[in-house]
Every structure is written in C-alpha cells, then in structure tokens.
Length: 85
Length: 133
Image (cartoon, rainbow over all chains, first blue to last red; front, side, top):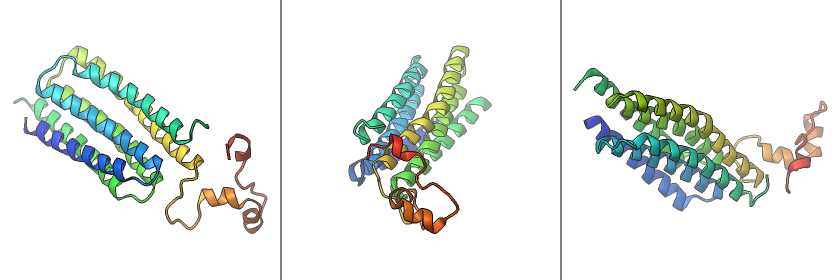
C-alpha cells in the first residue's frame, strides 16, 4: 500500500501549489485555472482515500465530481468575461 | 500482494507524477495561456491514471463500468473546460508573455498590420461581429 501513500502525497503537493497560484495569481484566468487543477487534485484524493478505507461508493463520487467540475470550469469561464461570450 | 495490485500502485504513482508536473507548470509558467495548457492536458490524464490504478488495486465488474464512464467523461470534458477558460482570458485581453508576435496585437493594430504583412490577410478575421469590446 506504499504506492497509494506516495500518490496521496503527490496529489497533496499539487493541491498546495494550485492553492498558492489561486491566492497569488495576478489575473482572474490564473485563479480559474488554478481552481480547475485544485478540483482535479481533490477528486484524485477522494478516489485514493476511498480506496484506503475500502468505501464501496468511491467511483460514484468521482463520477459525479468530475461532471460537476466540468460545469464549474465552464461557469468560471463565463464569470471571467462578466457574462459575455 | 498480487501482480495486479503492484501494477495498480505503479499507475497511481504515475498519475501523481502527472499531477506534480501540472502543479509545476501552474507555479512556473509565465502567463494564463501556458498555465491553461499545463492544467488541461495533465488534469485529464492524471484523473484517468489515478482512477484506473484504484480499479486495478481492487478490481470488480461494476467498478469497471463506472471507471469506463469516468475515463470517457474526463477525457472529453477536461480539455473543453480548460480551453473555455483560455478563451475567456483572450476575450478579456489578458496580456501574453513575451512572444515576438501576439494575436492580441494583431487584433488591436488592425489595418497597419495588414499593410505591413500585405497579401490580403484580414487582420482579426470576423472577430468584430461577436466580440463585446
């Protein structure tokens, strides 16, 4: 199970880096891209923790979270342009 | 520990390394467009590798169907979301970093650029129709 722990550590580093960019990023697009990467990292962490605790619903949560993340990325893109297309 | 479990853990670590490269790109790249390219490619592949690794550690039939749905949806949607963010950055005139020639200058300079580059190229194309400003 050492591989799962290494994967969790790498995903945590990626989440911390995207949080840094989300706080510091000079433009709104930087923050939106960092939020996208943060969501991907959180979804991966959900999958790995669900594997560690042997939850039967882990892939359901990942499926729903990836679809909601796509909708979130699209609405962030609309928010950057203040509603213009 | 079976051979499939070891392969699954290796795939999970590969997905973590892909995420680490995306994080490196988000930290070090200079402008939103290059950061978008880092996140859009690495995010989709990273989630696919992590979920397939999770399936390989504890394989079952119903989980296989869910993982196939996750892989198809993730590969289809992550690039679309990232490109939507990059396009809205382009629409709001976020500056590009240091190239010799940017598409934003091409749009704003208009006629002069067309004269210099000559040969009947329409600068900006049909962008005057749908652009807000």
